[in-house]
Each structure stands twice: as structure tokens, then as C-alpha cells.
Length: 214
Image (cartoon, rainbow, N blue to C red; front, top):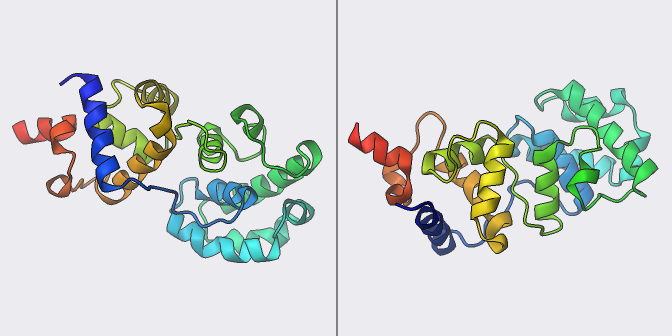
């Protein structure tokens, strides 16, 4: 199967079965999504969604978050993974937004990655979800699923996987494809026990073909 045929088959499957895919993080504005995505690093969206309502209630704006201190914010997110670092990151992020970006969440990856706690993956999520740009955020799910399907080849880093995916997915589908791959990895193509018998992508999946021939 040619790579172009594999990509088209995978895209067609998701267009038919899950045309409207979006983040499972709860948010109402760019500031809230940025907070939620920072908290979601190495943590489940479900856990983040349990924590953020209280954070958003008591720190409803960038300014309010920038004005708080570590001891005040930490109890809100102590159940999240790496709460010490994330508390510092959230406060530092808010302070820099106030100081440098007029309290507005930037629209470019180059500006976003200047913020504490914001790496390329987080920046890609923001520009794709909030600003509808053709950006591909590669988390562990996207990295695993794209490799198993054969959409990426010998990609050793998230950036390498991102580059291959963006090159081969039509621009109008890139932002949605990020969510397709995440959700497929979260609920079907699990890390340890992928649900191959329930998967509708078997004919396009290199992992399944190899497994079935073993």
C-alpha cells in the first residue's frame, strides 16, 4: 500500500466515523484552555477537568492568576501530576502574558513557547484549537497511533512525527486529525492492550498486519 493510500484511507475512515473531533478538556476561552493544557501534561484530561472549575472560578482572568502566589494556588492543583512545577509555570505564564502580551494568549507558536510551562506540543494545541491553524500537536497518543498505523516512519521524536504528519495530511484536516489520533489512542489503540478486533482501521494499520501474520 502506498503511503498516500494509507493516509487517504485513515482520513476517510475518521471523516465517516468521527467527523467532529475536539479536545476533551473543558474551557470557555483561550486563557482557560492554556491553563488546562499546561495542567494536562502527563496527566489525564479527566483529572484536569475535575480541578479546573475551581481554578477558573477563583482565578477567572490572566490578571488574577498573575497576582496570586505559590501557596495560594498550589492547593487547587495538588492532585495533578507535578503540582509544584505546574504551580510555578501557571503563575509565571500569567505574569508574562500580562507583562509582554497585554494579557492576551498569543496566536503564534514562536510567542507561545516563550511562556513558562509551554512547549511545542502545548503551543500547537492552542493555535489549532483556539485559532484554527493547521498545527499538529504530537502527544504520546498521536506518536504511538501514527507509528502503528504506518503514517509515520522511523520518527524518533515528536517533532519528527509532527513533520511527517503535517507533510502528508491535507491542510484542512490537520487540526482535526490531531484529535482523531488522540481519541483513537485513548479509547481504541491503547498502549499495552490495543483493541485491534474493535478497530475499523485494520486494513490500513501496519501494526495489525504484522500482528496478524505473527
